[in-house]
Structures are given as C-alpha cells and as structure tokens.
Image (cartoon, rainbow over all chains, first blue to last red; front, side, top):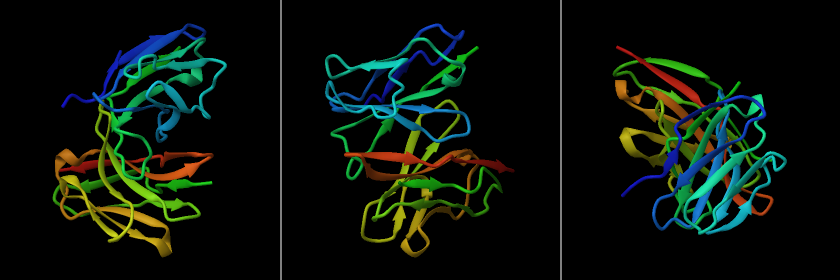
Length: 116
Length: 115
C-alpha cells in the first residue's frame, strides 16, 4: 500500500513570495490533514478535510494560507505572501474516516520550507 | 484546554540500555493517548495508542507505554534500545476541541543512541 505522498520535499523562498505544497493521501482515505511543525515544536493542525469539505480550519492563518481538496483526493496548501515565521515542515496526513478515537493518521514525509 | 508536556528535550542512551520517555497530559476527561516516532527526513509513524482498558499498551518495535490516570502520565518504555531507535519521539493527546476531535502534540524528545 502506497503511503502519503508530498511534494516538493524542500523549498526555499524569499519573504513575500508565494509557495504551494501538494499532498496525495492514501487511496480511499476520506480525511486529510495539514500540520505545521516549527523547529523545536510538535505538529500543529492547520486544516482538516473530510472528502472535499473543510471540517476544521480554526488554526489556519486565513489572511495568507489557503488550502483546497477539490475532488476529495489530493490537496494543495498555499502560502501567499510568505513570512519568515512560516519557516517550518508542513506535514500532510490522512485517515480512513476521521476522528482520532479509532482511526490512525498516516503521515507523509513533509515539505521543509525555509523563508529568507 | 488540553496540553501535552514532554519534559525531556534530549535524551542519550547507550545501545542495549533501557529507555523511558516521559509524557504528561492535561485534559478534563480520559483522553486518547498516542506515541509517534519521527526519523530524520521522515513523517511521523504511530508506535502505540491508548483508548481504554488495559493501562499497559504494547506497540511496534518493542515499545510499550503505561497510562497512569493518577499521575496524568503516559510514559514510553523499551527494555533494550537499538541504534535504529535514534529519532524524535512525540506524545499526543486526542481530544474534542470546539466540535472537532483532533491531536495535540507535545514538543518532542530527541533520542540519541551511543555505542
């Protein structure tokens, strides 16, 4: 079974530029998550999709971050314009149905973003 | 609000020695508890999880964890570490927050193994 795929693996941009990350979840997984992991911290949930609908985006900085999952499969996370404090690893995860009680979240390798 | 504390930022252990990584949580009800491992350049992999029942949970790679309600702890243990166990370990609590059930992670403990 293929895991969660993410691209690119690394990205360096200057502040005020835009950047986009792509995630392809495990086949058949309805729930997709984007996490931000700043150096020295644990992952923080940015947005959660159930199929192509948003379940939770309470911690997404909506003035600069956006995400979509148009066909309920792969997803794109965009930052525009980027700030220095956006430097982090962006992790994508998926689970079969959602909820953490009985479901396991499977994580991709992440995209490491450096904003200069 | 729920929170997770991992008091040890970095631990160094000799290969073959025993290991215990500490995790304390704060949550009003009985939470779901998890341990994940993150190797360099890799995503997080689930080691084990606790939902209910037996408070001693067995996981993959020879790890186990014990839920102690009285101490609000969920410490991870392994009797004999291998060089391949060197990684970052994250404890997480699953809880309902503003209508959504989601994970809150600790800040992680980096494990170094010396020969």
